[in-house]
Length: 240
Ligand SMILES: Nc1ncnc2c1ncn2[C@@H]1O[C@H](COP(=O)(O)OP(=O)(O)O)[C@@H](O)[C@H]1O
Ligand SMILES: [Mg+2]
Image (tube, rainbow, N blue to C red; front, side, top):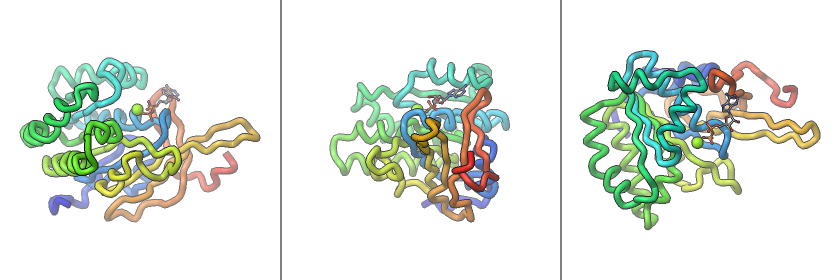
């Protein structure tokens, strides 16, 4: 890990989550946001970047999943104006098409670290490392690409969100089984099913956050017209 990681906190942009983290993500961390489809991982990534844009930071979204128009539409529906930031060269959104795996791998392993060092984004989102790991053809290559990308993100001084799909059989681990070890922090999004009442509740838990006395409890969150919001004060999920 980089020795340059400071005690400065970076706001996640998600109301309540910073409270769970005692101030936000430690600057320079790579944080894995893990969860099943539809839990709000992409929304959280966009919200994290929007918070940076609100502070005039340079931010980068590396997408292997949704095309850029879809991501912008999501941002727009939450009321976040990414157009303006892109025109001012404070936002870069890069789509790496998993269909062209070898091009994408080459770009991540050789060009991207240089681009990051030159452009120096303050925040990076990689959506998703699960798809990234699928680009690799061997286990060794899979490890290498995830380790290298995390190292490049730390090296340029950014605070980074790695989005990861959770393994359906073991929801607390990622599909690739690697990202949680590479990351400095893991935030888990999950559904709480309540078959009797036909309700599905969303819950968030900080599983790991190096150098942070974070909450360990599961707290409820919602996704609404202005994005994600965590209720860090709820004490009993069963009463919701
Ligand atoms: N404006 C909104 N109001 C309420 N819920 C929303 C809104 N926009 C998105 N959602 C919820 O967020 C989910 C999508 O979140 P997304 O960030 O794409 O999840 P993931 O990346 O984890 O698959 C949708 O399936 C929907 O349930
Ligand atoms: Mg997504």
